Length: 347
Image (tube, rainbow, N blue to C red; front, top):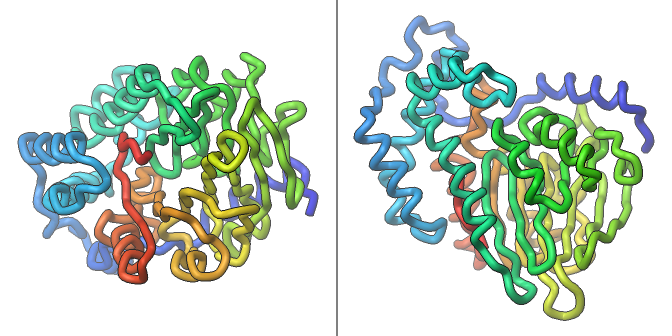
């Protein structure tokens, strides 16, 4: 299927109306009924509570769910309190004036973690030395990953107001589709200016634009298999999924990132990925994928706590809703699965 850039962007705008399963059912019910105070039962979070919760998440790993259990609801309350105030968006826009960002960070302290997570990943990215075929993989925000192999560093679906600072460290960048919660245009442009590859189906960088149903690229010792997939019924074939094979030979490590793909039957790995990343609330059936189309060594649901989707039925997804339910169901069925938080090192 071929679609010109203007038509594809129009399709992206249409997807804003797509219903994504959210969380906090009681809050959604109140919003839909125009309750004047839908957050009346959401207790405020003190700075001390929030800092303790963030500290717990920063000092533990994605494998320490029991230790993190008490922190999840504190973070969720802090995010829920942001729902009816759009000023926080000044802290996640790449071009916002410093005063507005500072005001948003002061009003919504949970956003400090958003920035701290980026700084933590950027610092570890520089200090980490990778030896062998197993890469280091960090979760940044939303569906964003930063990956460092023994030969190169790359990002997938990087969306963060500080993202342009990564350009000097990345050898290439992969973007699954043209929705603003999956990319940062200043980063794209900076990568282009540095003549570094940006693979996408909408950013028209010479030699790297990909709208084919299937295509393969090779960058250093990394092989990237691209396939097209549905985002939803309104956006067929709008997402490019990436199977990234790091290294060569029997020891190569394979990562499969499906972006906002909502169909398990559209996942088409060439081999058995070591790790699979998928959207936890777009309709993708992780169990069906694990059984039939995605024989991965580990399954990681992402796209929870995406701050661009606050309010109404498009709400960001709480930790204890879809992502942890997916993780627990997969584990009960004998699969390996974990849920990361911002700034986590996954591998």
